[in-house]
Image 1 (cartoon, helix red, strand yellow):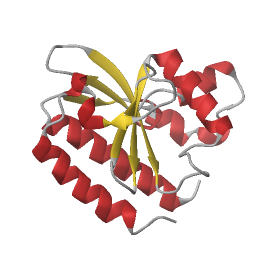
Image 2 (cartoon, helix red, strand yellow):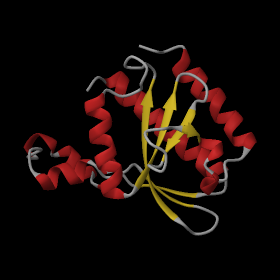
Image 3 (spheres, helix red, strand yellow):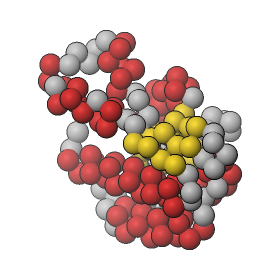
Image 4 (cartoon, helix red, strand yellow):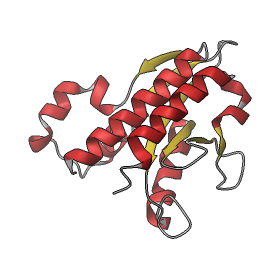
Length: 160
């Protein structure tokens, strides 16, 4: 994976995390890179072609506890370009939906165009909604405006 894409992914994860925190949710970094740092350092010797390895690599990025105490696994993805009309190829989307289903996770998509933060929770057929309409996270307007400005700054002018 190109360094540029790794950095963009980490920026997206940080922005999503901060948006959720500023909206009074508790956010914990969780994903493969965070929880299993030693394993990622051994990646050269780590057999990626096993079912166990696939499950480990699919660990969602965040655990979020909302104001009501409900717990969510959250996967964060960044896309600055569409594949035709969509943000994911059919193969990538099908695989991602399988991962979301396995973990009962929601997907936060950070994009280079408004709405900059979108969410998919599986309840709508393949549809993303602006994150502020996902009432379980009670996204605060001020926090959203601040994070939108940062997403625009980091992603809109860097679409390649």
